[in-house]
Length: 138
Image (cartoon, rainbow, N blue to C red; front, top):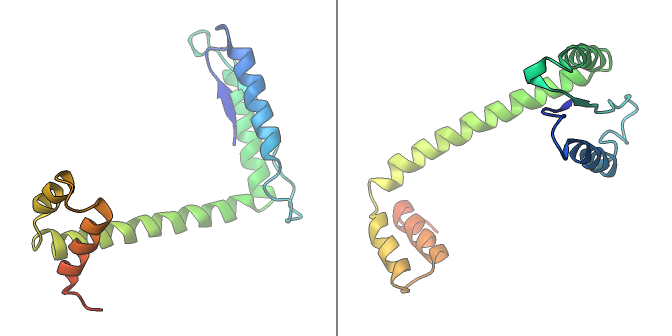
């Protein structure tokens, strides 16, 4: 990770950067149980409209890429990204299946009116929705 504080010439930018540094220090090292070296997250001041700090940002990006590649972090991070993407796709398919299975068979407007009218709470409405959609397969 790399943090860039843009508009660092504005009032409060220094305070923001120091508070961000404090948060990072409180967070500590994520890989304490690992023997891999841990990247110290830099906070880089920049003023984009004046092209100030751009060279430092590029340099830190290059150094970060070298660090994660050398220490095996790149591979593990990439695997986590792939895992997250697979989960997103699975959840999208589940949502599509659920919408086809349930939304066509159930009147959500009626449930909405029941909740709005105080007849049932939202959790009971969802439970009823699934019981009717699944045919109460307990």
